[in-house]
Image (cartoon, rainbow, N blue to C red; front, side, top):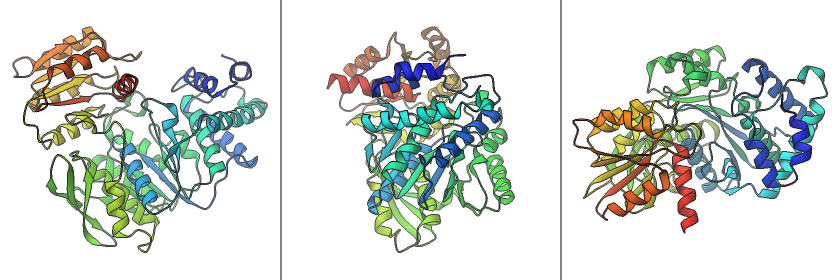
Length: 457
């Protein structure tokens, strides 16, 4: 086994060293211990940090978010409404697009490099002491654990008024599930993703996501999938947690343009409130409604005014989610079948007066075949470009060529590229101001291109 303690002492002397160390750690499993045992050890380390006063669970508002699609957007809406209320908020999300510090935000600013390093070293020092107990000899925190503990230590130092924790994947055994001061649990739409870890059916995946439900803590979710909702209801009943279900018909679009969506939300405080989200991503009315319902579970009407709701939703920004890069270029992190379907639903509202183009890539465990089938059958695109990305898990060029067979017989042209950035430049050069380009299929794809564009600028 890698001697992580020696690695820390010898290698980590700066922010850059800390990031390099974290990135060298396995993403999902660093040892042969069972996931349940690893979670127990993670929980014990969290309690150890609390006892030493390095993590403080204050009496503040704490939002815990799980689900398959929409988690990041819900977190962003929650963050924006807190900012509109004048409250300082700590936000922990994943993944990042270009900078690992995007995952840890307080008071609308990414954690500084200095604070990241100091918080990380605090965790590393405590971990070294913790390991001296023989029963933890085999425990090595994985990639996500280190980031979670770093965030928890940092938030305890800066003392925000509220904290928003987004799970990595799952819920039951997710590192974030060790927190003990939740105010509300939010479960977004559940779909088929990470099946190799969470299970091969909706019920199994829902059971993992519903693991964030704890005793007497209010729960907010959607009614998209009956099988998933049944699992969530059962868990809520078991833990005597009040359940708020946001049905589709309670966030009804009233007017859709390429710039904003006006929709009606059934509020517990204001009955049918007319609100709006920026952009033409139809799925954001659902995510906004989940965030609103969660806020209504936590804050009284006197604080959560209709003005706060309206301004909070309209000022929300979330990079890589139907993000407008230029007037006719959009980046969207849709990376599974349900995410692509939600994206396609929104494409028709873009006001395109020319042709639609798409640049697509995916990682190998994300059902690229099903995503491309949906894109091909939609008939929305004049041309689809397929390209590998610079990631060990990327679908390779030969596989993309084979998958492109789903476009045979359609009116959509397919171009296979060797490399992402040159593919992007080629597509951009070939479109007019009347055309629209969508880049989607993976957040890694979006992150790589954003870094490339920033460097060019």
